[in-house]
Image (cartoon, rainbow, N blue to C red; front, side, top):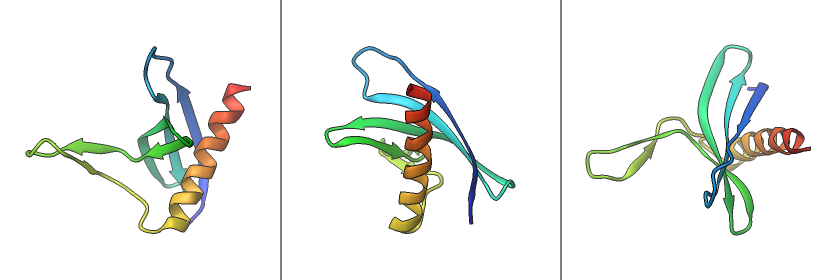
Length: 86
């Protein structure tokens, strides 16, 4: 699997930790939208798309299965976000 495209839309909201929204295209044939870019205490990280459950919690709709793939997503998305910031 290869990330073939990343698009980032910066979000500028006062007093918000959310800094952007990303979409990723995998192998030019599968898209994942609404990946949030969040400013955490230790820098930027991504939050996968999720929906609210009946009990009020949240559950990811799509997510990486292992740490290696999560890092691949994070590196590509945050790298594109930083390029947009320049």
